[in-house]
Length: 71
Image (cartoon, rainbow, N blue to C red; front, side, top):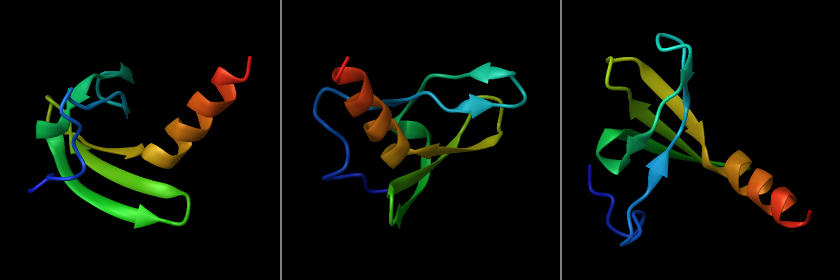
């Protein structure tokens, strides 16, 4: 998958919840399977190290980061 224009030069990490690991897992852009635009932002589909297909909602993370910055 060509992530040109999506991946920053300093790298991009995701931490979606994996039901098989029963915790969040740290995944890099090489784990990206698909990216879908939604009204709330990007939905990123990732393949976990264990093989599980995971979803990362980039729009929700941006909202949470903005809310945390206002503290």
